[in-house]
Length: 330
Image 1 (cartoon, one colour):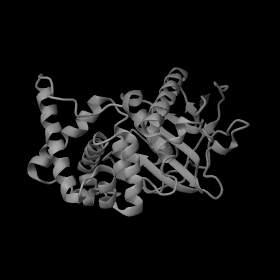
Image 2 (cartoon, rainbow, N blue to C red; image 1 turned 90 degrees about the vertical axis):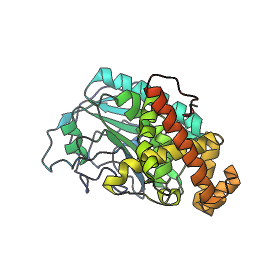
Image 3 (cartoon, rainbow, N blue to C red; image 1 turned 30 degrees about the vertical axis):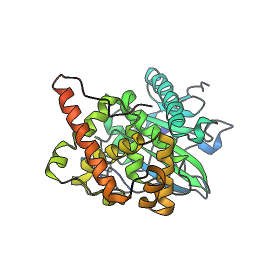
């Protein structure tokens, strides 16, 4: 449904670790912000009492953080849908974002068999469209070059706060950035007891992006594969925060491994594998889910997949059709 537009200044505190594109878990939303409409108090900005942060997900950026200078107040308007509350300064863009967010939520919830496919979110997800990079940086503490990030908080086994922060000026906002971040929020419903591993979280979120964006990620593995400087998969799956210089490789390899494993079965099996790996260990989960006998076999099979994918992308970029579509679309 569409909520009435209202205006209220918003001044958000700066995050504790500006400049870190992937900071540790933070509260799901800062304490300041527009109040929630009656009947949905649980989703007003703020970390609910008793809640603990479950995750913060964002996309990479190498720039340093914003200066700790006060930001000019913004007059937010609010556009509500069944599952989102959009805070914005541009009604046309807000309508586009609202439609895109609902569509992505539906598609990704069905793909990964999330509980979001069966019932509306309560609380809604607060989605902020910061009009300029400076507004985004000053009000979130993240670098101006970061396209966005999402935060969730959990209480017991229930998500009690959802928030997506996006740069409204980004040229790929609706096509790639919004789908990526909304997918992180969808996935949080599947991992309320234990936070989803970062490699899987980022890999699954990239699968919500257009095929061209996925291919771009895969192409970043060409030289590391040729030079033998990719992560060992046992290391990749254990890392949460790679070094800044290794982030692009970590990201590209996480996406590729996710694509490979999803293609061995289906998205639901992949979720089962990730959950099983958290309980029993990766090698047991590999055998039970994919009949892969440990990391050595996984390394061999994944590298074959990744090299073939890189070759297909190179062939396609020269104007010839690829031999097959190695990026599976659901």
